[in-house]
Image (tube, rainbow over the protein chains, first blue to last red):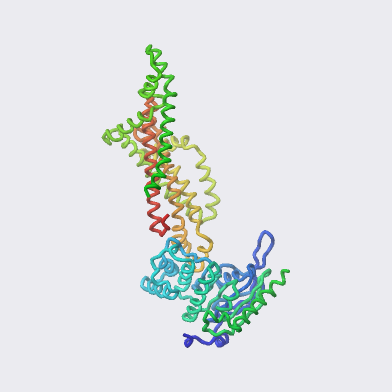
Length: 273
Length: 293
C-alpha cells in the first residue's frame, strides 16, 4: 500500500505548496469591540500532507480553515491556494469541505447527496454514476445508495458527507472536526479508514480537531494553536511511519509527540491565567 | 391498533354528545318565548313537555334544533338533483370553484412574494409592511369594493370572487414560505458556497426543498382562508349561487334552518379541503424521505 506513496520527508521537501499563508490575520468586529480570531499566521502546507490543527475553542483553527475555503475574508496578510486566491480556488472547486455535522440533505438519498456537488458542477450522467459508486466504495457505504440519511448511523452519515466531499476529485480536503460529535469507538474506526483513504487518494488534508490522540494518529504535521488572539504556537513534524495501526498509539514515539502537543497547548493557555 | 383508534374516537364522541345536548337546551330556551307568544295568541294551553316538543319543530326557529338542520342538510344534499339551485352540493360546488381558483392564485402569488423577499433585501423592507397592512383591512369592507371595481372593468363572475380568496390566502403562504426559504441552516448554505453554486442552484436544490413542510403547513391555513374569502365574496355582491348566497337568502327570509344547513355544508367543505391539503402534504413529504411518524 505504501509503495506508490512518496515518503513523508520527501513529500514535505519536494512537493509544491498547496496552501501558503503569510502574516494572515482576521479581526471580527463585534459589539464588545474587535475580536482577533487570527493573528500573524505563517504556514505552508505541501501537496500530500495531512495537517491537523489543534487548540482550544476560540484559537482560530476553524476560522483558518474557513479562510482557506473562502467562507471568511482575512483582514491582514496574504494566503494562496495552489497559487490562487481562495476565491479563485473555490471557483475552480479546488477543495472539498467536511463540516462537523454531516449536513446531508434529508430529502435526498445517500447517492443523491453524493451527487449534489456533481449536479452543481454539471457532470454528465454516466460519469456521475461512476463517481458516486467509486466514492461510496471508498468510504465503505456501497449498498446504502437508496437509503435516506435518517436511516444511517451518525458515523455512516459522516462517511457519506466525506464521500460527497471526495466525489468531485478536489485535491484538497478540508475537514472541520468531522468526528467531533461521534463516540470514541466510531471515531477510532473512521480515523483508521480516513488514513487508508488518504493513502489511496494522495489528497492534501487539513483536519481541525480538539483531540490530541486524533491529531497525532492522523497527521504528518500538527499545528498547535492558541486563542486571544488566535495564532500558531507550535508546528510539530510527526516522526511516525505512514502505515499506522491503531495500536501505534501505545508506542513511546506516539506518546512523545502527544506530550509535545500537550506542552504546546499548555504554553498557549498560560497567556490567559 | 383498535384500542388506539377507540382512544381517539371516544373523546370526540363525548364532545359531540355534549355539544348536541347543549344545542338542544339552547334551542329550547331560544325558541320558547316565541312559542309561548304564538300559543297565547292562538289561545292554546300546552304542558311543559308539549312546549319543549313545539320548540323543536318550528318552521322558522330562532335557533334550529340539530335534527332539523340534519334533516334539511340531508334533504338538500342527497335528495336533490345537483343542478337544482336548492341543492347544497350545487352551492358548495359554486363556492368551491372560486375557493380553488383563489387558492391557486394566492399560493402562487404568496410563493413569488416570498422568493422576492428572500432574495432582495429591498423587497423585504418595502413589501413586508404592506403585506401585513393588507391583512388588517376587514375583508367584509373590501369585498364589495373589489367586486364593484372589477365589474367596472367588465370583470365579473368567478374571477372577482376568486380574487377575494386570493387576498386572504396569499398571506399565510407568503409568510410561511419566507420562513421556509430561510430555513436551511448556515452549514448547508456554506456547503453550497464551497461548491460555488449559483443563486438559482441554491434555490432549487436547497431552499425550495427545505421549504416544502412550511409550504404545506401554510397552504392548510390558506385553503381555509380561501373558503372564507369565497363565502364572504358571495355575501354582499348579490351572488345568486354559492354557500354565501344561500346564507344571505336564508337571512332575508328568516330561513334559519337553511342557513344552518348551509353553514354545515361550508364547514364540511372546509374539513375536506384542509384534509386534502394535508394528505397531499404527507404524500409529498414521504416521497421526500421524511421519517414515517
